[in-house]
Image (tube, rainbow, N blue to C red; front, side):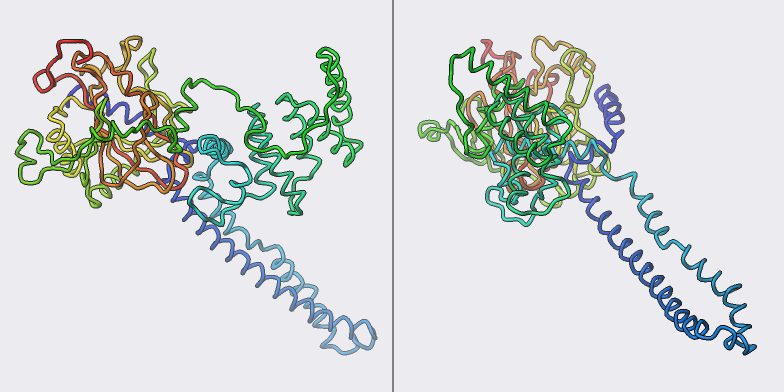
Length: 536
């Protein structure tokens, strides 16, 4: 086995130690939870049936004994004068009441609890629930969806009965609050309050919602509205532990600010808090706005002049024997850098086989630490992936050979075929596939040079979201099942093409399956010779 296979195999072994906290990152694995829940519902129904049967038996005993005691207590001595009645009383108290006691002590829940215990090891935990909540907030930001639309299941182009209750919205807000994410806390707590004010029933109290909401609004710098919300809280619960102190503090702070700015008090806006009321805090990603706009299909720089330079053709890999009789259909997706899409590259049967091989191995996708070269998980890449060797199945070997025939590049030094499944809000924020000059050790252990090219296979259609976008030049490529896209990450000189920084947009609705082949420099010396300049 080559150094490359040994290395990737060791990576695979490390990646396959899947924890429960990674369940939500893959739709493919979350489907198992659907069937688990169905089995538990059946177990619950069996428990209810057993409880009803037990209760019916106890009721029958109660009715029979009630009739007996009415007769016996009417004339106790006369009742016991009959020897049969005396015997049956002794028998009932010695035997039958003991049997009834045993019946009452039987616990029909044992089977259900046992079944729960078996499945609980596969249940999502608190970290999973938090991750799923943050995924919804990520979708909310990327696709500019307000909390009310989300709570009613109104997603772009999708009609669904999936709704969020007052308690769901409160839990979403509390998740953000506990993470000091007061921007999202305000949006979801406000939605919980609105639905409660509209008459929806809930477990959570209005006082609890106002408590969290008023403080979150204060953290967003809106003192007048924080004061108004806290006053509502005091009116509902005058003895609230924090409300009175918070109200006095907010009022004093506002008066101080008004004096310093020499301004008069302005009452808070009567408009409800919604998306856009407060500015979203900046984060680590400089191209956040352009990236998310492209995910929504906005800001795409496809001009008529550029479109006129895009063509479609049949591609035979420069008369490659594998493609002579059946060349592939090639379409230009972008002119510079050149990105092409190949149509009908993977059959449905091949896709299903690849997914079948990958599913048991799916583990939280990793990224390479630029300083250490070590693979690690990161919040900006949320998916699950598996690595497949060509020797495992003829389908994988055939796909590898097809990639080599189409690109004209050897796959002998390429990485294994990586299969990824994106779950709830699954994404991969803007990144480079190649290693930069400040990451000299990124692929050192492979010994195959840098990633010269990327070959990306789309193995599913996606109902909404999930585009591959290039913020630097404003391109968006949408998943189409069975097609593949290809681009070079390096110029012929070996210098990185920084324009190829790209991202996998969050999946809004659906399940996104992809596989990719990262092709390395070694072995391409005569297949893709060096250029004369740095940017050839």
